[in-house]
Image (cartoon, rainbow, N blue to C red; front, side, top):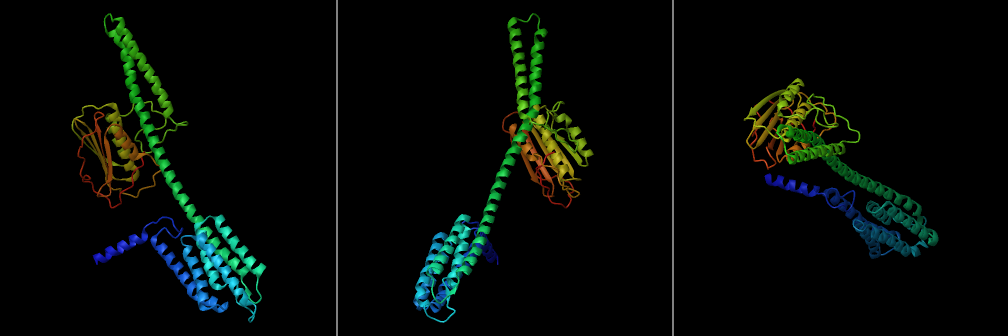
Amino acid sequence: MPRLRTRLRGLGAWLGDAPSPQSPPFSRYRWRRLLTYLITGYVALGVTLAGGEEIARDYRFSTQEGLLAGAVQGAAVVLALRRPVPAWGLALAGTVATAMAARPALVTGPLPGPNWPWGTPTLLAHMTVLLLLALRVRVSGALVALAGTALTTYLVQGALGAQRYTSTGFVAVALFAVPVLVGTALRGRSEARTQLVEQTTITAEERARRTLLEERSRIARELHDVVAHHMSVISIQAQVAPHLVDDPSEELKENLAGIRQNALEALTELRRVLGVLRSENPEDRDDPYGLGNPGTGHAPDAPQPTLDRLDVLIENTRAAGLDVVTDIKGEFHGYPPGVELSAYRIVQEALSNALRHAPGSTVRVEVSHFSGGLHLGIINSAPRRPVAPSPGGGHGLLGMRERAVMLGGSVTATPTLHGGFMVTAFLPRDDSIAPRVPGPAAAPDIAPAPAPAPERGNGP
């Protein structure tokens, strides 16, 4: 049994392989191609054998001549799978040759005479060829083939003609228009689907690129305040320093004045950079959960948040409906402002995601201080109630990763075994590559609710 299941899976994979578009729209799956080849081969065999016999009987050919005429039509049907245009020419030429060879036999005989110039075998073969041709060539090419068939029919029947036969020219041309119409419609549908897939792929790539640029712009606007604060401090210290020294030398005054002037020029350039980063019509995004301004739109007037404001952030989250517990390990040694800002934003994004995607869950926030940096862990249990549709789409995990990579750190986000979600991050104290710090091996002991893991990725 295991061997049989393995063979069945292998057969299913073989039948489902996506091939190169050789015969659209029947080539998406291998089984469709095989079915197309089987039906086409069956039609070709029927036209060759049964059609050859009918041609020999109606046009008074020998058996060998009838089979030859039928074999030409059958060969055209098979050739149309790969080379539809030469197949159309072969089928049309074979029909004309058969009609001309049968024309002397139509002088005598009972009325009504046999179908001419299109007999049943040649009619079926040509319809199949036109269908396969319309699936493979442009609309103009299919219409040209149909027009060429109609013109040839008119010349054979109208200009040359015969005496005792049943006319099939008008009916044949009307029937030939059907496969051309069907094949053209199927080909147009296949092309439209391909273009839609390509456009969807391009749109998704552009959206991802735009999202990345927007998130980087948001982070740059926040870091502007940090850098501007330091430059302002440098400028003020350079201005005050001469007054703290008795009889400062002219060289010292000149150097301090240069430091202050450089700091002021740097602040001016920073303001210009911030103006470039802002959008043409900036709009502040609302924060429906009261977790604080995420730094989008206008740069906030208040100082950027640090780890000292984590308690306020957690209290706001509890007020919004989440049960949040904290676990702080190690001794706080002080971090660069960029590290504290990024740590705050990562916790903020994770808590906001928990509010959006896991309402009523229990969240554990772990903050571990190491000599080399800061480790964060935000783990939530499964949602206690159905998840409401999230309004809009933020940058969520993308922003977390951008902040961590900017500092040389890392972020990991993964579902837990109990239907929750876990975000861990390590931010080094300096720009060196962060050492490996083991995060929690599993979700904390939080009673989960029987619900699937929520999709993550939308920030506040």
